[in-house]
Image: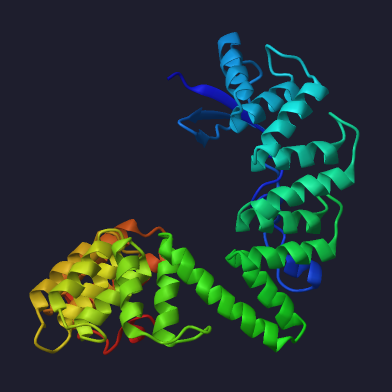
Length: 397
């Protein structure tokens, strides 16, 4: 089936109104960049799933219009929305027609289309296509938010804060913020915690911290990776109204690690290496760290340090190999640390010759004259056989 162009203008949906309610109630700050309304856009729909291109089309073909009209006439709410926007915007082959625009938008809204409800609210608020009617604007915006997601409720709360396309109203803002929080929007919950903290309302602070914990767990269950790591922390500590459960904590830590969460990978790797909360498995722990070392030289340094530690897994040759891998991407201060380790034999086999080579590379790469002189003196000390300082901090003095 040929794709149909659906033109959807959503002037007020989730993330459009980014100012924190804390700003209004005297706590917290947030970026106003998020408050900018999304631009009217063309939606290309296939099998019921819409994608939002960046720019609105000023014209569609007669064939596309006929296809939209046919589907709209058959009761398809997305097609009704698209047809309403065509008439509202005057997209060729039609001209602006407020009556037909509102007629089709109302049909879409009555069929449960939330975007149509929101758009009708915007039309009545703007007062260009139809006579401005704030009461109707509020009615349709609240209807959409009531039936919509937690993010929709949060967006409406922020709309009432800014007074954008709606009159500023603290009470309605707080009402919809609460509704968003109850629906599990963590941004709303964080702002409610800030508001109640500012008002010294410990009972409600405790309530919303508990709500946040369970919202994080629910979010983790949907596949949200950062929420998985937060779920691990909640079950590990037993804070925020969640009972402590090491098995559940490890379950979510593993899920987050498998999904690529860097802090989760490192945490789980350390657990395997140390045998803490999980069975000791040095090879598995190192394998996890190696994934991180591929993109971050500091993890290569960490692996080198682990192999350099005294104990059953000490392997100074591997420690040096990982130092060499780290050297390829290290910043200057960390490369200097590498030089000191090779010079002093700290966690690796002592290798002044290689330390001198890396020092020469740093001198070549460094632009500052003072830094060149500093590094040149270190190289002279290494080449002369002078013992390395007892600690890296002494070298940096």
